[in-house]
Image (cartoon, rainbow, N blue to C red; front, side):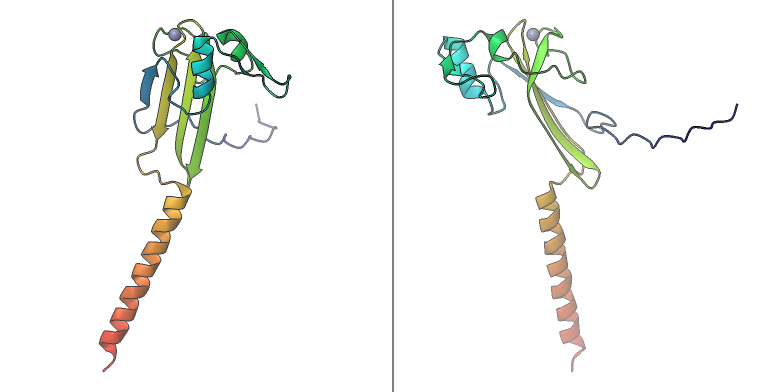
Length: 156
Ligand SMILES: [Zn+2]
């Protein structure tokens, strides 16, 4: 049978695919990511925390389930690293891409054991965009200096 439908473009790689280094992991009773770490301390001692501005305003004493109610599970990495439960929610995620290389961080809260599971990854040659720019500039300046030095040599 002949294919009449156009072949779809190959899907762009995602952050969790083609990993070329180990994922760094960390398990802790409080978040490693700065975000939510102050609120977590309050939740743990039963102090009121700020209500999400999209649902109300003010402060409220919340259970862990209530507080994390709006977070979603990351189905790429659903497992709690402490107890292997998949009853988790991701509270922190970011990824940076630079010239096809990637770096990312993810942290989950386990609703069963209340431990945080951190995962972070960087491709072996990853440079942040600003590091890459800096490197490019210093290389250019170096080349320029070399060129000028050579020109001086040539001059009588
Ligand atoms: Zn757990």
